[in-house]
Length: 132
Image (cartoon, rainbow, N blue to C red; front, side, top):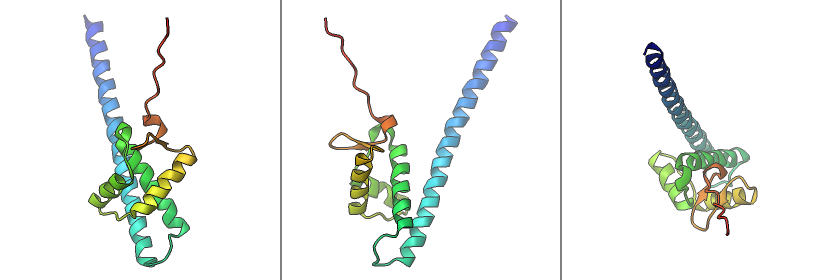
């Protein structure tokens, strides 16, 4: 009986650890989003009316990647990315987001199913059906 109780305690501790690891990942994503917002806002003041600098393009791509990670299996499109970013106080240009997403598909960093973009790890794999 003591062995069974000890096993249950270990299982509970493992579950708590796993839950904390998920929370840590979520917090890391939030920090990354804030850092990108800071970078985008800093670049915004310096480049009013100017084409996007290399740093701003990198920040845009990084922001899109964070949004895609947070969207998970749901995925997103350019419009939803702009809307989500706006709710966080980040202003994104829809056209720039759309062209970045298209480029990311060509680079195989992102998948596209005709309506939504997803990171490869969140893309459903086709199920093979055995034929008789």
